[in-house]
Image: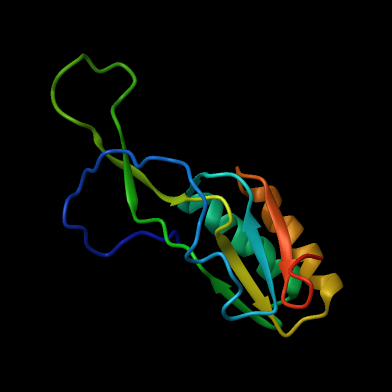
Length: 140
């Protein structure tokens, strides 16, 4: 099931600005290992779910997984052949707007080899460059 907000104040928003460095959400808070975004950008709810499934598959549902981001920005789209005017399109998908340095996933309770393999598989599903970080040396 894709992540999306239960309720929004406004159904259609402007597209969010991309850029900057993350201060909040850039340090490990729950787990021993994490997947950190290196460049600012968007991650869709579909990409996030695909990455989560890849982690669950590689860890065989062992250990503990935290998802540190949530896709709450709606992105609208109009039909390909529609004429100009007629208002803004309906929301077609949701994104998480991320700054560089934001942690997307955190993992705990697993050996480093399994974590590295799982987080690399998850990073292949995301559209932004990532890095695996750990509690000890803050990079593995």
